[in-house]
Image (cartoon, rainbow, N blue to C red; front, side, top):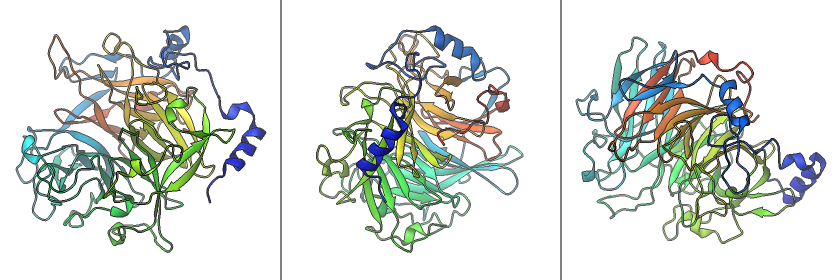
Length: 493
């Protein structure tokens, strides 16, 4: 049952103004400890941010003599795979452009990691595409796919192809039954870039049973568009999906399974292309007014009610899904990116907003509560005007995961220097790692984005990727040392 505007307005009236604005918004959002910027997007540094810098997190980052990864004192990293350097079990080099990743514990305390490789366009353009392993290929013309990396408890690493011949595998999501859903961030059809099949779908990859990954088939019921991340509501069965697109901005989707369908291993392949109902979200404020774009929220704590509008042509053979809606029918957001389920709902990211959006910002993190049918703004990053001068400025959140130590961990995909950074339940931010691998020049430095941030099941290791050239890292250290005031708190419950 959807939440009506009237229900939300009545509820908001009872709660009072606090439903829309909760917490200060005067700290510098792009500095550690900041939670938001004033309306307009930018703010000067403040004593509030300086005080928060010392109050939360693991301390300052220490430069890496290997010029790869700066970490706080007491932390260390190991390279798990590196494109063109490490090898698959079958002998081919590790593919490049690592992206969305999730870790699954094996029966002996090791980890199986499913890794997306975001390789777009013609296969011939990439020196290290995902190998076309026999029986695991969807479209031989496409370069992307997923590899499975087995990091055993004794440190030994093996890697093999899960699926190949998919395109622009960006983010995705883990299922409650222990598989990975990989999303294609493209709408390219057969005949373009040498493709032999349509793309823009979700594919399921099983880290434990590579035979299941043979003859990969898209889950067409989830729609064809520029997919980013996916989460599954383990209680209600809904599947939520983000879209990273513009002109117009992308949408957040919900898929409702058909009557009688039960999720589980090997069930998604049984779905017909039109199974269930795919809907796009629309949100409204406490006065019942439609919010056309999420960038209009400029205060941390802003809460909106959520409703859903049915998608008419989910396979988008004539018109892109997001273009099937007229102005005023749905809510849009620029660069809807990472999602992660936790605390009875999920966090999702709008990476940044510029001229294509009503209000500019450098990142939002929202929490959707399916029981209340509301979204609440948890983190807001003001426009970062100093992307290289201050190494602790953040912009462009992308992949995201819930931390077992409280709060969330965010992979940065912005301008200038790239970080992994944390955000507490209060919305305070702090650094975890900084990419020091300069893939540009000394005169014009360039640092690739972080991707694929995910904790091992035991919470001891944080896995993350540097997308270009494609490096997977295992970070260990005193994670329990996170400031006691924030450690162990829920996030967004």
